[in-house]
Amino acid sequence: MRHERRSHPPLGSSRAPRFPPLPPPVEHLRLSDSRHIPFLDLGDPSGFPVIYHHGWPSSAWQAALAHNCAKELGIRIIAPDRSRFRPHRNPGSVPDIADDITSLIQELNIPKCSHLGVSGGAPYALATISKTSDKTHRGLLCSGMVYPHPECVRLLFRPYRALTSIQQHSPRLLKWTLRLAFGCLRSTPESGLMKLLLRVLSRPDRAALQDPDTLSTVERAIRQAIYPDSRGIILDGIRLTTPWKCQAQIRQLPVWIAHGQLDHVIPVSVPITAYPDVDPSRFRIYPEEGHYSLPIRHVKDLLQTLIP
Image (spheres, rainbow, N blue to C red):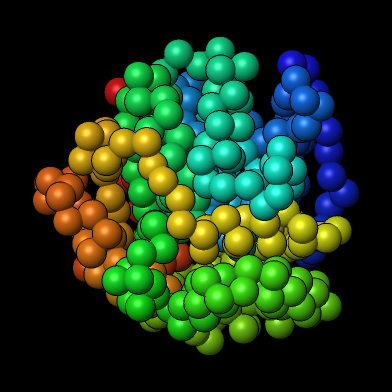
């Protein structure tokens, strides 16, 4: 396997954000089958490694939100970019991508690490931890999506419920639906994309995204996922709405759950319903936070729980 470094052309606003300039250099790990695993390497290069599993629809550039705090805490952030993954079979599955991330951990010679799964990244974090529990210090599922069980799906944000329903009845239709949706987003002006998002978010989410630098980082992470095309993020959406099997029960793994009480996208009732056997001491409910505000406002607190 070969380790390469590449850069992508800059996208979006030229405003200098508080976070690292986007996009930072992209590392590429070449697998034996000639596929590449793209990832970002942020924070403290010599720090304790934390694998950052970004949300959906987004990209590894979302991890820039954690860069400054990670550097302060002595944490190395390694963020695989699923939006640019090319699975060995289409569309692949959550465990298939977890295998690729496991290969990344092995090739980077990481003996022990933690995992932070944010929103749509939570299933990938959980699947990877189940495959590498001996190398995992701790996992944290933040505002996390769960296995698409009917009891959980009915509690989700309406667009997510619709996508899961389409997938169950016609996977091909889901692919075309996502292609159309992301095609429309690509033609949406930068300010328009976030205006659409802000309309449907809770009060704490809107407040957290009032900061121009934060808003710019979140938006550019989304745009990186859909430019120059949206094939990777479409496959990601298909995988997340397709039932998958975890190798181990969550209660057997070193996994904690953090969720905002005011999350309207993935309500707090979703992880409570999905993980009834998890020790209550491993649930951390933030009463005044939503879906975006939790990983933005409490990123330092979340990262601190992942350090040995």
